[in-house]
Amino acid sequence: MPGIMRRRMRRRAIVGTAIVAGGAVHHMNNRNAQNQAAEEQAQLQQEQEQQALAAQAAQQQAAAPAAGLGGAQFDALTQLAGLHEQGILSDEEFAAQKAKVLG
Image (cartoon, rainbow, N blue to C red; front, top):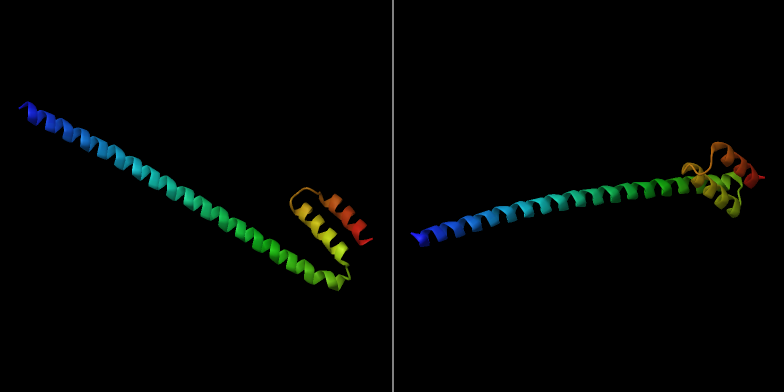
């Protein structure tokens, strides 16, 4: 009888260990999936921002020759526009700096 009890106790220990290990694996897989989804979302957002900036730059470059701006003026206005969009320059500061660049 003592041999049967030992085998049962070993089985219970093995089954208990398997349950705990299975739960840990499930938790890690779930966590990895969440991390991967967050990384993909961040990458998608970054790509969208880059596309928007590229489109804006292309639009500004197309408008620059029509306005008769020189390269330095265009670069300065582009930089000012970026600072304004980021909230670093207020509307008034942007208008004042823009007036200086355009003369």
